[in-house]
Length: 258
Image (cartoon, rainbow, N blue to C red; front, side, top):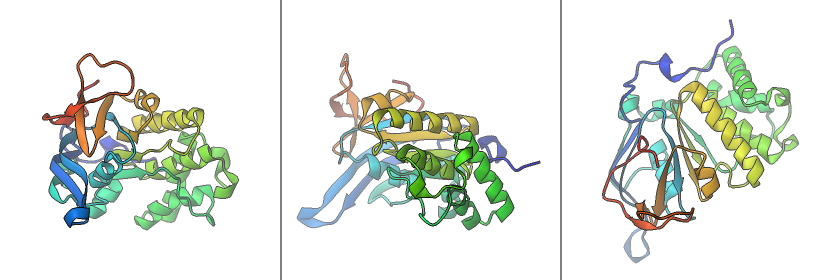
């Protein structure tokens, strides 16, 4: 029997607790007059199974928020905790939280299958199991025919789907995708998002996607809006895609559908 990618139900976790909780989180880069405040006093929760789009223009703090959630950066003030992951340390966070970046960042000398299996090998997964879990992840994303190709033999959409497979092969409980469709045309971008959401659903993983594209945001259940490093509350009765609003004084939760 071949190994399967671990799902959320495979571990002993607090299933009702937020996977990520931000309490009055701020992140400032630099000091003095030239300091840049990327995130201001932000409060939010990402519950299990959430499908959240973080929407805003470039420079609004979306990527910084995701990096803080993933433990790739530390807040200047406030706290970022992971109660639903049993307060996981940095090593465990890397296994529980998968990050998909805007570019696929595949290693050119390695085949598609080798790229997907590499993080598993680094985690200490035996080679045979790592290879088989990579094959399962690639098949789940419709890439079974590309396993022996090198990155420079892939289209942009195929390469990004390989990057998604690389994250999902580790069986994360939370996937954070930072503008995963930003370098793709609209049609290809929607296809990549669809396979990401579908595969995450099979694993039972929560998903947070940053985007400036309202059409991409519309594919997710919940939308948080950011401007100038703050979560904003859309104006009542505001229609259309380009929403304006005021900084929110309420905690944003992925369980509150928009």
